[in-house]
Image (cartoon, rainbow, N blue to C red):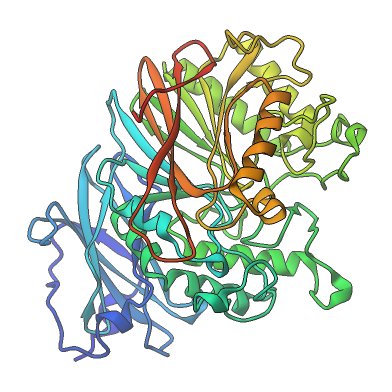
Length: 520
């Protein structure tokens, strides 16, 4: 028995629908209709966004129902609604469940084509709290192995949300960056993706992974893109890995296709008016923290300077955020201070703390180091407005770093007290992508030796590691925060193991990290 699609024109959400959420006779089976799982994201205190995809239909409009309940058995339903999807959005479906209670765990499910989805779990943001715990990850590449990291996060029941800081997928063909034939993970399509169909197919492949599905099913996500959701080292007007002469087409057409597929396939609210590239937005956890998500990649980034071009990296006209987003960021930081927020937290893509060579020169033009004028303007604003307790969460580099964030050069910074620091930067390693050091040096001992040299040249860095893959957990309380790094032993085979590697604690008002004796 199929549903009458006339009952599902438009999208609605309300408690106590007249229509029952009754199980129809099986059509394709749960594992086929909901082959890409369920997800939730962008939680607020009174609502959360729900996501799924319907497989197995070629109709122009497919009816989808959803329910939210207080219990995993879905008996205490508090909100439900219906809508449609179709080929215009690749049969993906989103709904916002409103009218929820703050700081509360809920369960949800969908129904389409006569089948019910697995039951997901999500959580709204608190209006008042003295404790928040967030996991954050980046750089998940199927051709390099298994998503053991996602499974370890899925197994945790102590998280308020999971942040994905970019490189949710990669655009390369097989052996372009990792050989997926070793794991049955050869990229689909097996080419560099450039068209809307390509990006949709690659998203579908990633969402077919059981470990990725499980972490989405059990935790609300807050996501931003980095470059590989489009192509390597992207900026506003182009990318290092986009060559028109190689028949990759017009940059703006490719960028538009990648952005459309991202908003279809990710549990993220779509900006209005549409179409738009805006992903920067804010999430408030009581008065404990403002989570300010930034786009350091597409919306306003100038083209990267060349490696070694220190003068170019310091050029005053270079911008990482763009004028509009930069002004918005300052407004959000000022509003957080005025509201009495304890911790302003930036969720973003590239390392803010300096990474200097032995001569004190910046190394990587793709990071905030390559946009020194943008970073200095932020520091000037923090100083003039007397805004402290800044916490920066970073992905991108497939390495683990914990550091204070002073200006470059470091002459005004005291590594023992943190004087001269404007905040702290916590960098999570990759879900599966290896670090450049690991690929170049090969052994854990050689990687550790090079990291030790970099720590010596960068006294603001309190922790560094570049061999393992894993994730971070940020634990926040009014008087302190602690960031913990958890590593898995391998991504080349399935494993249920993980270990705590290090923690850095920051006392409120210090902008200075110190090593912790154990996990928070």
